[in-house]
Image 1 (cartoon, rainbow, N blue to C red):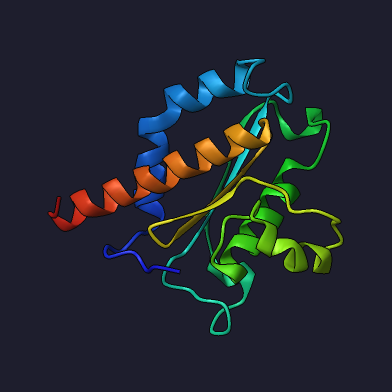
Image 2: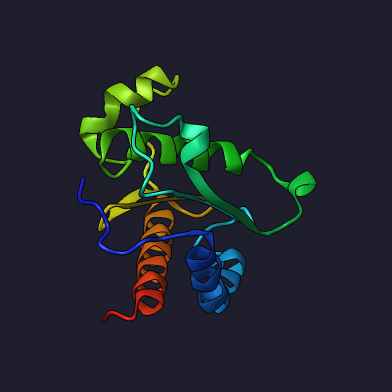
Length: 155
């Protein structure tokens, strides 16, 4: 997995999500994107690697959008965390066929899309259709990368 060239911290992710808030709000309410009314995102710390950090220590940021948790029809946080764990531990998008072994270890028969690795940044989203989970995870990763580049004064 490629490592990001810029330091990404929780502030970068928060700034990216603030910038992307209109997209996320639209997505959580658009039936074509998904019907859960929930989006849950997990962003991993690119400076923490499997073998040198636990998964829990490597989680940089988590955020829910949409319905209050008590109204969820499924545990979207758990799904997003599993997708993030698979992508973080394998260095691949969670829906890739080659991640099947990692998914079996978590008790799933088939890979679940929605965990993305973009420029070494792992982000997972759950709550939308799988195709949109991937889109939203990718956009969050690119937004965090943009914020880190701006913070570093690079372009």
